[in-house]
Structure formats: C-alpha cells, structure tokens
Image 1 (cartoon, rainbow, N blue to C red):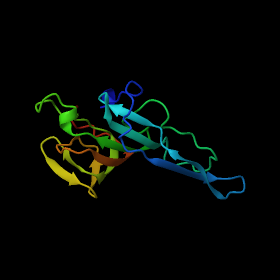
Image 2 (image 1 turned 180 degrees about the vertical axis):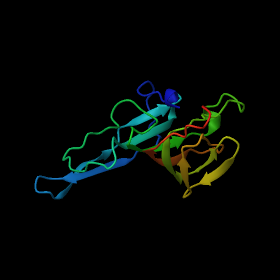
Image 3 (image 1 turned 120 degrees about the vertical axis):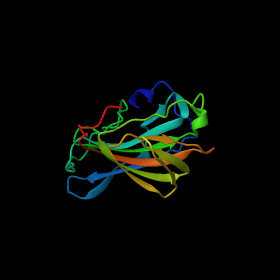
Length: 180
C-alpha cells in the first residue's frame, strides 16, 4: 500500500478533517510544558485522490520511548511509510472516501496488504468493512479492531467518508505465511 500514497504530488483537500496536535515535554526545571499546539501538517493523499488522505500524527523509533528529550524529533515529517519503524510505532488517522470514488469498477481489487505490526483501529466517524482473506465485517463509529499482522484491506461501501484512527506497533512477521 505504500506505493499508493502520493506524498507531495497531490494536495490534500481542505474538506479532509484537520487534527490539532498538542505535544508535551519538560522545561529545564523538569516541569511539564506544551511544546507544540497546532494543526498537524503531515497529511498525504492516497491514490492521488485529494479527499482520500492520511494524517500522520506521531511516530516513535524505539520502545521503550525516550521521553527525556526536551525537543523531540518529529519522525513523521517527510516521506510517508506504511509500517512503523523497527521497534517503533505510528499514530495516524485515515479518511477513507467511498470506494466508488477511487475504484474504476466494482471488480477492481481492494488494497490488500499485510503489515508486520500490531494495529489498533478505531472508527471515529462513518462505517467501513474490514476485509481479511476470506472474511469481512462491518465496523461503525465506536468499533475497535485489533489487527494482528494479518492480510487485510478496507472497503468503504457507503456514500460518506469514514474516519479511522490507527496505532501501529512494530511486531514480528509470521514466517510460515505465504506472501501476498
């Protein structure tokens, strides 16, 4: 799926929901402070469709996380990467457009992919089908999916955008599975 993210080539539409990102840290005296409070600028169009977008909110490069840095490095700045870094995590929100807006016909394959990660998916708004190899389930606002390194895709068969929050945590790939 990384190849469908068109970072920088197509601007994300103004209609795509914007998210305020607030980051905390510590001052020289060790007191808790806000070090950033602004609309997150790390937005990327998917499949060259301005209304089909991801907002990359935060990324870590290791676990446990080092919270001692006064000015942490913003790892989501720059190119989009679907998977979290080795031993790291990604926090993102995807606004899925209805499938009819990006699929040329009903027989076009879904964007099946497998990430070697533990993914938490929370539907904020709308509805979406979580697809596996031979099964699917409809998720609605408030539903949560724990995605454990399985082959999967998303299908928005409704007429409205669906907004899903994801947290991906690096994991081990299952060596015995066939490649997809």
